[in-house]
Length: 94
Image 1 (cartoon, one colour):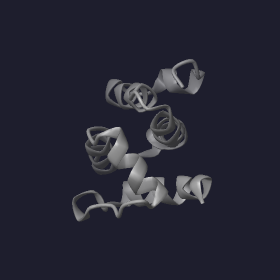
Image 2 (cartoon, one colour; image 1 turned 45 degrees about the horizontal axis):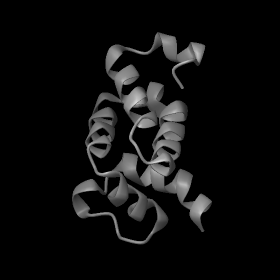
Image 3 (cartoon, one colour; image 1 turned 180 degrees about the horizontal axis):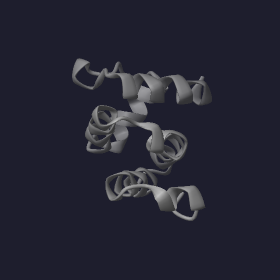
């Protein structure tokens, strides 16, 4: 998270996305997106970061239902970044 020295080297856009990932409101979603951001934010391309920032605008309840499989991911959000989040987190809820 923010205390991680490697995150000190992130550009402002990535630092903001990382902060937003860990401070959403619903703890389960904080853990899902925060964990993903900790692992991946530095390596995302600009296009992937655009996709991720779109996902940060989705309400927590919707994201959680998508990750748990309770609801399908709408086509609008079915992008490579969301698929990576699903692949890395879905096993937690199975």
